[in-house]
Length: 454
Image 1: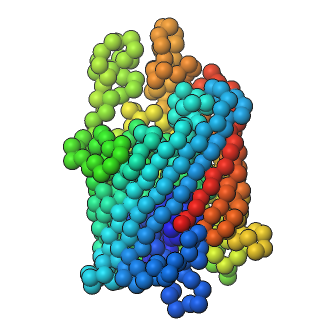
Image 2: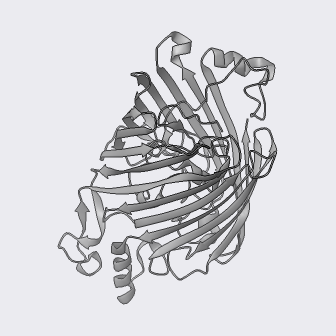
Image 3: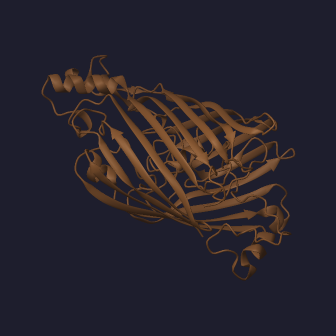
């Protein structure tokens, strides 16, 4: 994956980013950090394939940077859950970034196109539980096996000495709003890279799902940014595979975010704090109340239509102790809290806390250890509906076996750098109440991730 680089108030991020990147604010910006081509050491030495015959350097001088990564997450349910079993999946990321100022002299203009190929099996649905409220494999999804799924296709224009950035095209809103890149040290997609509780079943699309949209960022000072977007609500998430970009709109999604990236003390300990949310104008079915005002279960009437919904979040990370000169070389504390107001959304709250230690072993600057805990609270309206169904002897909504109330995951891992651009991450996850109910025993999921930044 590509490294991020803090410019003004923001930095670039793409899922499964390597641990030497800046954990700061996320923005859809061309992911290549400025490269110093005057050094004797190859600027692409952190890539597994290096700079063959100087081709990458030649392309970079022309304003062209290529992305190619391979990621696999092989995990097994070894105790609890639905049944024991192992599942492999992988993701190949392919992208191109073009600095159009270098290439054709268009000042401040850049272009990005990126897609993924995914294949494998889902450990959550096959072994952990009946639902995928919690996905232990971060790279599983997009309808299963896909040859190529378009994730990003956009133009970006910088103005006013890079204090104003305008982005327009086809990309996931969560690349710029509500993302906490440090969370992708974890394998599960509740932690990486944004709060799942405010995006599941919403039109706030998560990477690699995308939709048409635009956003404007204004950085009043170097450490502060403000950002607002306008995205199309769609049904198909850009299609299962290929280059499908639908214009059939269900409404609009308006995300907003304010961020602050201070540095503290003599050691300039970095912190990244943000608050934001979104408003979704699409029509959606209430999960408890019918058009008569009575419960759907007892009235047998159609569900009430919710005309607008939304969510809010607050969180950040702070380095507590520094172990080295890099932006993540230290002990870092992370926390997130969310609130979803929509009566049609399956979750109401999410609380996540994490601790990451990187470069705490001399000479192992890319190695890290991390631990994360997330608690997701199910929407009380969903719980009430299922309680009514249970009392009446009706099959529970969503096909679950027990009333859903909450679900938690505790994850621990350690990342070893094996070679330039290649790392392996042994991982352990304990999933409490796998289907957010009491039907399945707590699941223990373990395995590893291999990431190759080619």
